[in-house]
Amino acid sequence: MELLYAKLIERLAAKAPSLQYIDLDTGQIDNEELNYPIPLPAALISFDSIGWDTMGELVQAGTVNITVRVAFPIYEDTNQLTPAQSRLEGLNKLLILKEVHAALHGFGFTHFNTLSRYSTTTERRPDNLTVFSMVYKTYLTDTSARPHTTPTDLAAQIIMAIP
Image (cartoon, rainbow, N blue to C red; front, side):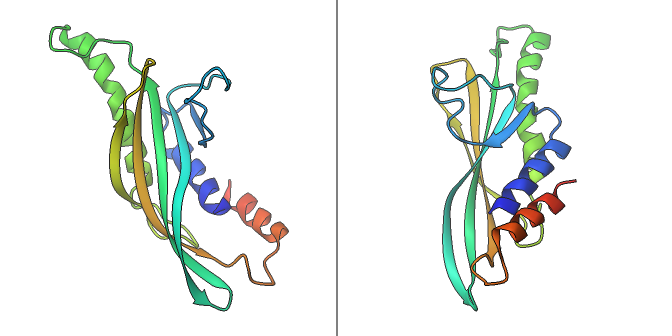
């Protein structure tokens, strides 16, 4: 899973230039009083569930649900009474979702199949953030239980995967 996470960060950084911050979702935007402020727009990644199947010889494969929460503020009015140019500035922020989707949908690598978007939802929030949660699915192969795989081997794979 570490390699998958590293490749997701690399891909988003390269293909979604509007994002200012990409990280593992640890609740950074859920309780600002307990967390440091993060640059926005941001993409926060979580691995929500993995259903594992044993393939034999200490190899497992699983269907992974990956949630990417895309957060950004919209200060501009977007209603029909707002002049078109001002409304367009606010609505342009929604194009960040297209960037993220274009970067991730169909992306695959060694040990995981291509990602496919499963759902998109909007989070209702009391603060000034607009947050969309996009769920992608992929199929991941895990060989970490094999005797030849050590934590050092896994770390080397991650480092080699990052340019």
